[in-house]
Length: 130
Image 1 (spheres, rainbow, N blue to C red):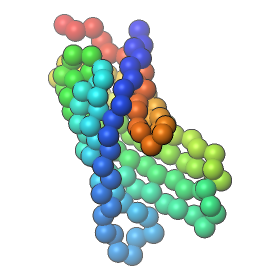
Image 2: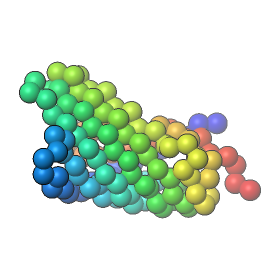
Image 3: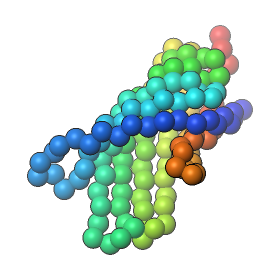
Image 4: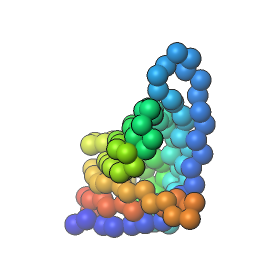
């Protein structure tokens, strides 16, 4: 059965110098709160276009902490596209990336930005605890 959780998070983006690269690279450092009490570290690659409102990014982050009281880690994959202002973002748990009590985790996450604050909505499936 799919479980739905949500909560706020803070993110710190640290630009990285990649001279000569046509894409930008940033380090991700997040703190999740709510039913997901965790930190994450990752990297993002982004490309802008000459057309205002068109861009793309990909990211991978490893999340470590607890999800509804079950501890472990898992990896999220992001794919985002903006086409002349129309946004599309998918974030998936990488299959078989769950460790510890999060082994077998699958799901998708949404990022919500409102009034300058970030929050997540996470729909996931996790086998029953042994």
